Image (cartoon, rainbow, N blue to C red; front, top):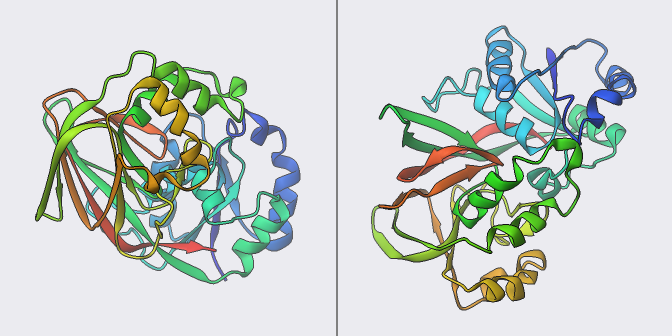
Length: 308
């Protein structure tokens, strides 16, 4: 029998998660007779919570929230940035209750609370890959962050920076796309150099680039339609410089899964990616900000035990 701890982000789903917790709690009690739970009160708190609970012997951590909550719990699965799991036998699960939830949607985790909790209780554990970003912080100290879905630089990160200022309760289904339309009015592509598995070098002006473990981001945009979360590789998708109306005209390709057919889009598979730029270029990972280029992205194969 698992020793279960639930981590709830009450502000997810535009603040609705906290309001519907009592009903969800009763569903969890039906499938897990004994469990503990806690609410997060500030960003990134779930990381330290998950790490401490795993150290205390809990071997199933269930998040209630969206992709951001899942990202924080995934970071807590590891001992700081050492790539070593706190407990290699422990599993993670997620009950979807977020606005975007792109990775959750990609994995086809049901949004119905009862079905998602039942899935966690009865499903086999699937080992999925995790991405790690290595970078230097403002004090030039080596740091690491983990991501389970997609990390990207350029336009996508600029959009996340813009929409992150919008209060959660005001975010609609199309808030990311609206942020995209607003951002491209003044956005300029960046010159970057990319090293793929220490063997292939790519250099140029790129509108955006994604290092993808999952397929979707930005509320349903399919940036990496061929990515698999357990194949041991990233799908690295690079989009060359485009004019504003060219971006708008081709944005449909991000929603219908045909982005790789565009002549200005290339894709490589890689286990390690190093990206450099003389410009200040932001990175976002699973919707989180705070990192700029240069950075190194490495795959941790079968890094997390996921209940799905």
